[in-house]
Image (cartoon, rainbow, N blue to C red; front, side):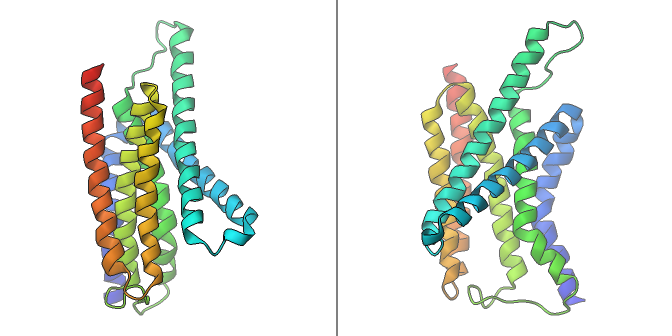
Length: 237
């Protein structure tokens, strides 16, 4: 019973915030639901690309830092591709010049929808397998990287941090590409690489005592940068 309660609690940690965004924002328009599904698909494609690169670069498989950089690069590229598809659809709808057909969306809600789908799929990949495997195990699993905290809680906290960053990264992607500031995409790459790179600390004993707090520092910094960039660039335009 205690293990089941732990699983439910960890699941609420991961999925409650992103589910609230989905219910309060995405479900208001069917167009946003489609964008959210597209965001989830974009993450799956990024995961497929990074897996393919992992299979191709055999000698560097043991170098975690290189694989982190390649995986982050795939995600940055897929976010940009998703925005380009959104922008192309926007242009096609506007060029149709139909009296009824129009684009009733803006970059804020659209980026939130895309980030919600992207983040939900990311959370499922990080946390879902542990949640599914734990249903048949009455015990609580610990890992050497965090000997005092159940593994399911550690992964739940990591998944929460990355889903919040997914929302921020998608918002920044829409912001930068809309204003043709492609060079600033490097900011997203650096912040995402920093957060993902910190998880390498989990390879050492009790590494989570360092990695988790630092990942959350990066998450807070990412959210603050997102708000500052939106305000600054909107004022400039």
